[in-house]
Length: 397
Image (cartoon, rainbow, N blue to C red; front, side, top):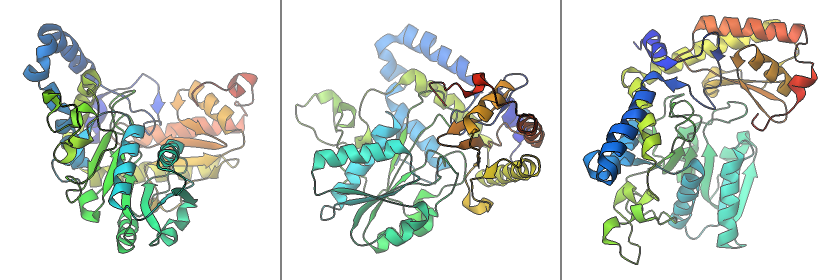
């Protein structure tokens, strides 16, 4: 059994704060500061450029990829870390389209994160007017997967509502219709069990600063199935994805397997923080994590619904089809969230009216949930949100 008391002790959590926003940015692992300091002072400071060899910097994208791969059910050697999630979406989507050259339609849903859709739009603008990004409601995705579709690009857990797609069923349907799949695991990795190899996924991407706690700006990851790894073309053909980066050939030759999905120089200092964050996962069973996540979120829903009648549940009521977050609708949701934050309960807001709460068992307890409900109920009952201060929009919501 996973010891969640031990995992909680691994994080720096400010006194008096209840942190329900790990689905946006995970908290600081206590070991990360020392690991980053070591990387800066002992490695960069003492080794300078020789650190690329002496300190194993060049191997970090693949090594961290395997550490993440264990958490998402990937085959060893088929995940690599680096760049941003938007770049990895672009790479995966471009490579997937290339594998299905006789089709021109990218299928996604209206619950997908806008950045994924923007990357698809940008790619289509380069490929020409014959290509189409087709959006359907999340519940209509399975029916929309037909032999007209080239690629399905789906985020497994909806960033607004927490609604969870059935990855196994949608991947099976896609393959029946000759569709290549791209899965965005931004709200899945570290939140719920994922089995990419088991469901026969083609491509997957994700970020590491949410549930994986890699820190602000932590690098993204990309997965490519073994059956595609030596055929998928990365589109963004950076020098570290070259077969021989230090031969400095003027022409590009893709590296072997997942290494070809590398683009630019890896952010070593940020990767050091991520490496420390991943240590916490060594003793975590993902089935235990999922069970505790459901227990926390169910308790929160019951508490809010019994004390906050002005809030309407926006997430699926069935925990089996919900990720590790809970969302409620409220017309003045932004102001209510700002009031909640002022009372040291940290969630976030997503336009137009979503109050969003993440449940991360690594550091949240049932007592935290009960206290958060009590504070939220007081804010709603006494209309503490109804002030000009809390209605003033900030740059980040």
